[in-house]
Length: 311
Image (tube, rainbow, N blue to C red; front, side, top):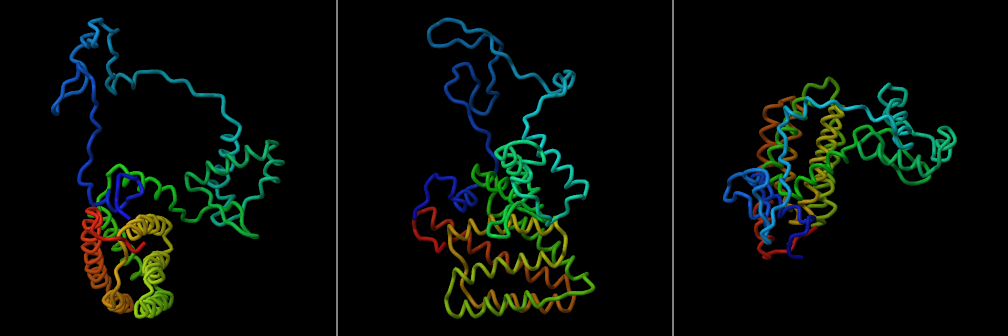
């Protein structure tokens, strides 16, 4: 699989991204070019190819002009927006708590006296902003989200697709969040590291067996389990969003296979048991920097068509 210009090529866009660039306008004979202003010099001096003069172009007004305008509230709402508002009010007031299951579409339709299509549209709008999450199966349905990273993930994926996030920035963000998580975990009075230890044991067995896909899933899960220990929904949500972007990168360029990852995990867990946050942060930083160099090299080779990914 070679990289092209598809937005799905996450690693390619991450490594090619350095700074944000504004889109350039093309084909405007009256525009100033070469880094200068792209608006016409004067309203009306833009002359098309036929010699006839168009109507003067309306220039964008400065922001201080817009602040003097009087806007009137929009009184009419689509029905689904009113349904969304009422459910959102229940969530924000605490009447609907995190993890609570909402009534099914038929029951909500009867309660609000609206169609099931309207209810479905309202629920989807609440899911898009992270208030609800949908689960499948016999016990599935719409639930009040605990720490839903999907809206945040969508924003970051969009930034990656337009070249707004680089691999360096992703690693820098991970270092900051991991450090905050580690510091918080080391302050816990009751610290249960058994889930993390079981994760490392399983990852070691898979590494020895050469089972890359399963091992990668456990490596990602390690960071999620670590964040879960904080019981801080903001840290948990941010960690999950970052790991979702990392999974996109891994799918493109492949994972890291090696027993050195397991050794790093063992040292890290020892520092956590000792409540030595400084040493734990240093170990995590060293590990993430090693991973970063791997992803940079792999992404560079793949962008030139030199290797194929493992994802």
